[in-house]
Image 1: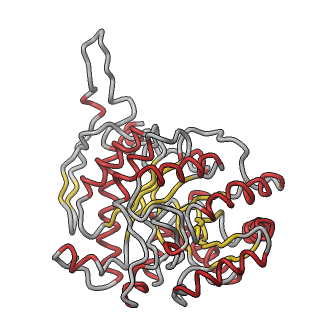
Image 2: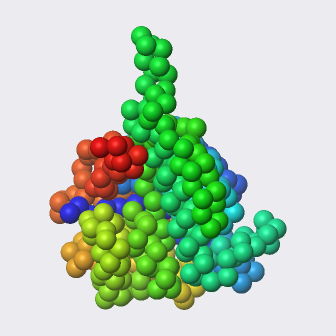
Image 3: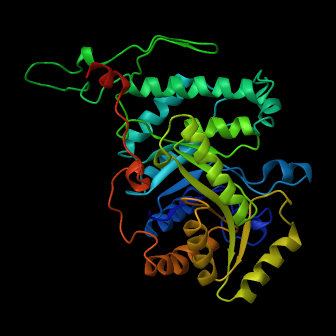
Length: 379
């Protein structure tokens, strides 16, 4: 199996002091973000993820702000226009929205991108939103939260399936624009939502856009992620912990009657690169001197491109993950070093692609396209 790579783009980078040294503009700049997206696509990465948190709570507790994060959904839309192959994922919480809105927006984005989108299901750690939005989510514990989120995701997937693939007929000879027999109300009535459907957007090119979830701390949350996600992002401080988490998530997936190959597990990893190890260490020390990362943040690599490529391959070969969600410490510097220096080394080792061979994000990740449950019910 190929080594999968996604990269997260946020502000000036994932080190809390990145803005002190980054050449990115002080104000949010669409052109700068679009340029970074093109760099990532040039490197033939699987996807760009927008909305992965940047150590927010830890920074807030220290009375600092370290980045200006734009809303990931319109940002994703802007990146569709400047890319052609790379996947694009955006975070949207299940706390303060409705399944119909999520299904409609991501179906539309998937059509506009010809099947390159992912919904990053934001769960847990969203308590900071309550005072800003003005209401609590009303979910008191992990079990209640997972039950709510599970119903939310199920409704979204039902809505994506409510149009069969052949429903959008556009037959000029017969005058049939949409085949009504192939568009289905979902008639969902549950604990949290009552949704008749169907969606008013045809089925997305991927059938279902890819669902990405962060690996929760609780056992209940991990069981939920293993049952419902296409991709889980793990944050483990060492190789042995990552191997154990990988095995645990696969075991939980099997217990939910899933085949292990339907789940992708990516390890989050921040990185600081340099032409030599001394340069990399000097860069990291400069950043830490301004404001060190929180002790509980993701694992961080500091070193040369050769050392980084060796580490990525070793983790993958040891079955610690199926790939990595890479968090550049400073943008665009570390992203450029990744694409210019690390990716060629990985290609020499046969670990990553030289060209895109698929069109959709599901194809990039080796995930099958699900058939509409309504079409399956008729066969």
